[in-house]
Image (cartoon, chains in turn cyan, red):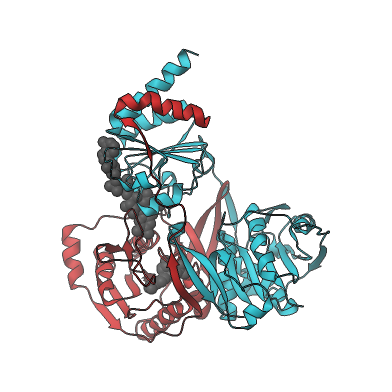
Length: 334
Length: 254
Ligand SMILES: Cc1cc2nc3c(=O)[nH]c(=O)nc-3n(C[C@H](O)[C@H](O)[C@H](O)COP(=O)(O)OP(=O)(O)OC[C@H]3O[C@@H](n4cnc5c(N)ncnc54)[C@H](O)[C@@H]3O)c2cc1C
Ligand SMILES: Nc1ncnc2c1ncn2[C@@H]1O[C@H](COP(=O)(O)O)[C@@H](O)[C@H]1O
């Protein structure tokens, strides 16, 4: 039996949306052959049962009490066991922290190439023949999404992760419930040397940047840490989160948890307001998921205007308070 | 303690990615160069650990001869010595990169003793392969923890913290170990002028490894769709406020 194998991440039985997106590409790569899934951790059986709707024929649930806390090499061992048993043409995961990490472990153990954050397959790359013929052609993400790369991936099985939000999760027609097959992976001591030993809860105050409907973000043009007061006031009116550029975090004006971009947080609000931000590709990589972008910039030639939907040209220290005042006025006259 | 940090020279692109005519690379004629913010934080973290516990920080890069500039910058941040593996013009795939780094580590450890801690960026800024650190760790037979936002070294052990939904996951690993870090783990220092001058005198060892045929082979680069919008100008100065609020109302965010 060939086909493909996917690491399906879940949280206590609730499937991760990004793994379902990865399944869309896994099905395409399988080209009609079997789609297998691996589930690790508590709730694996519940999650397994839900996978039929997405075209998974066989869901393999790794069961061992030592898997209760995440251990990357142990998860990789589960995949390695299944690779040996099922002989898949390709092994996939979502391009999450864990998905990429576990596949890197598998790649290192098997000394095989691994392509991270694939967005699509190129023609003729479906099915076992493409893998056997010496490589599948694919498109993958570079620069956090600011650039794409067409590449050829060798190796059997082909190892690849699927970039978040590149594809929609889609149910497969006519698929029944998968067979659920619990198994005991052959864990060895070194597989458990790196394992989560402790979880520390942190309470976050205010509106989370990643989930906010509106983000008011400031760059070098804000001028100082104190300069953010007018952005905070606007954010309060809009129940928005405050974000910033890397120049701002490097200067120590805001904590890194506020940074939007390739090496910061990726946001997807309905409206992103970029105040005094030039629009470097690494910044835009973090906010291009916004439905609309409004740029407030004194430079009518700033690159951010080529990523924005709306712009106001001028000094943000005048414009931002004027918008806040206008919102207040509108509220009081309602 | 002996510490090693691996960094990669990448172009500092501005507002737009411009490709060369053969679509094999970014057009860099008018660009400066840098390293990933993750790697910069890796250097800072290693220098702090050496300052705290005593020790020496080596910085290693596989890149063109010009990558000396990036190594010197890390030496100005407080690293002690550099290793520059000259790569030639063609891009190295992650397996080839890992193999070259591994050979250099083995050679250096044979001469100078094992590194207690090897620090990588979580992913390279340009190619983002998410794997070089893990591959090197496996080949060395050392534990590896990725994506760290917190790190402390005590009694031959490293306490490693990752940011996850709702809090932090903590790992405890014995040294020697390999870690990869994320920007935000610290706030890197700006090197002083005297530190920059001292960096010029610090040693950099060079060699030129052979590039193996890539098994993840770049065919060509492509700019993603959706670039080059033209923003609708709502106005100039504070007089534009009513127009902005009108747009907010249309978007249903007021
Ligand atoms: C690998 C890598 C990863 C990176 N990751 C990130 C990241 O995650 N996030 C990030 O933000 N950056 C990131 N960067 C840095 C990025 O390249 C830029 O340096 C940074 O985004 C620039 O920040 P800025 O727009 O605030 O500053 P600048 O580029 O200096 O722009 C300031 C803007 O403010 C405008 N301005 C000035 N005064 C006013 C005023 N009074 N009113 C209105 N407008 C005004 C100016 O016209 C200008 O457009 C990364 C870089 C690299 C190499
Ligand atoms: N050419 C290189 N030279 C030195 N270190 C590198 C190089 N490429 C990658 N690395 C290191 O490996 C990390 C992960 O890279 P990658 O697997 O390409 O995402 C980077 O953040 C660097 O620390």
